[in-house]
Image (cartoon, rainbow, N blue to C red; front, side, top):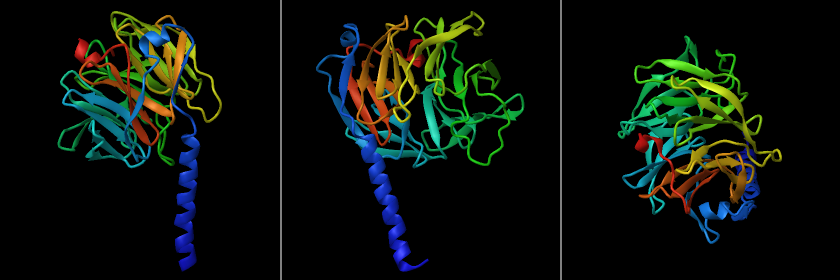
Length: 320
């Protein structure tokens, strides 16, 4: 390669990256209430703070009561601890880490897309494989994971992060349950691109985003954990580059906070869209944090933000 090419190619790449990030950051933070109830959850004078920035693509926020936030970076291929002063500390280098949760024993659980597996990440930066197959076939690319009211892990398995050239072994994109013995049970296969997921505080409703269909589905949960009466809870339409339903979190009142076009859409338990938190960067996921679990920590493209709310988050691993 000639010297001119050696200089030009990285320069072009840098310019393209800057233009791309500038396009993502053209929006200003604002609140768009559609109901007075929205302002009962998010105060009119709420201020969005930037906790940390300079990431590649942030995902999987998880607040640790020790006083920091776990954050996945799908571009840099690492999981970090991010502290209230913005300090970043590497936990593990891992190909395309995605959604995270704590289980009942406070183990950090991650959706490892490149490994096509659900894993446990140790504080020392190692990992343990918990599950990577259903019915003898490898998962597609696990995307998001939560702990359920029964203590089992529930996760989605779309093809969103399936590495190019890798063989797809499961012909559908499913939602699964993983128990402490390593048994994997298929809960539903009727979504085209399942993504974020959450239980209602009483454990009777189960919500799953379908990013391709741009909607949120809800199921009734039977006593044995099976899902029935799947139906559309709400739709989040938008333009091509506006973002899609991705991460979901629920507050103690049963309201849903769902990433979507332009920011975070807030829904009540009856499926009414109460308003939108418009974000400067497109969010992918969010988590409740701080001592009272009244702050939303939001992973949005290159940054991590925090927003104090007037409600309190439902945090499954603390509640049951």
